[in-house]
Image (tube, rainbow, N blue to C red; front, side, top):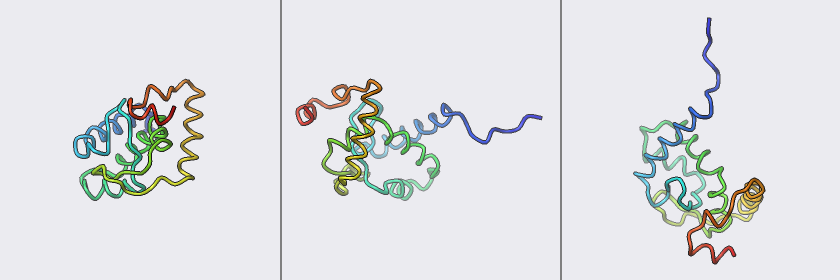
Length: 131
């Protein structure tokens, strides 16, 4: 008798994250951007805001999306180079703490050691600030 796996493969979870991202991009284009676009640092606690604005969306899908969205090099770069976090409307929603900026810089360094290039992830107006 075959039993169900306790954990689904990452590919399966990625599909949920991507579907959730597509919905959120449509609903909150000022804060959530498509793959490849420069990201903005999101407000602390934004999962609660998403859940309140979209009660039909499962919290687990929101968590998967946020994990996928915030653990990549382009998000860490946004935290390192950004001045503030944004809410779902793209409005400033708090400063980025020195602790969060330092963590993002350390994670970005790990990504760069694996071949990530900062200049490929920045908008032209941001390249001058980082250089």
